[in-house]
Image (cartoon, rainbow, N blue to C red; front, side):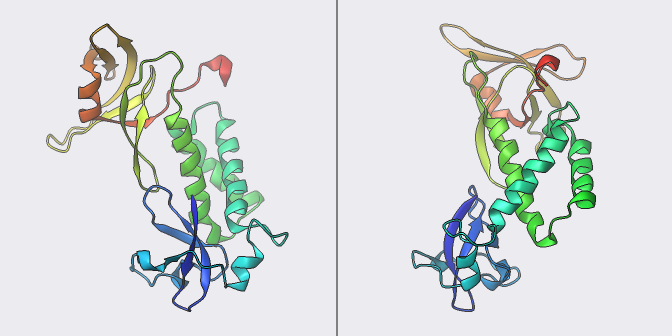
Length: 227
């Protein structure tokens, strides 16, 4: 998540919290809300990004550089870490376990409900954490990159390793099969990736073809001993 100073419609300079991959305005640090900077259905005008110092008293008060109340972004991060820890406790990677994430959010809402104004930031932090996991490069595996789309927007190139789930881009055919990576092998002349769809026979792709036709869903589950 990026922190940038933004000129609001009210003329004040707010601390904006933006999606680090798309530049989309998520919220502002104070309680004024992002619509103090952009109107409904309005995109962020790059001209509103400024190097001027913050002039919104509420944004200044929660700045990470002050000893005031906990910054909205840091408070949302604390909640996101709690959600992910609860989901991890089920023993399955959260990216493979939508039910685990749902139950974690439900439990959090019952035990320690965050302000509804924090939900967009919690989701953004959670997406960052899952993206970090997806981008973790498997040790000792030749690097093969495929697109990975963050839940809150922005596409990055992610490495693949045995056990990872990929989906084939079926825009033309209407068929989007999900496959698991079985092996990534390197020879003196090429790098190949072997994938399997359900109980079908495995199929091998070159690294270049894999990057053209597949995108990544999530990192492989950890072995049971490492959970």
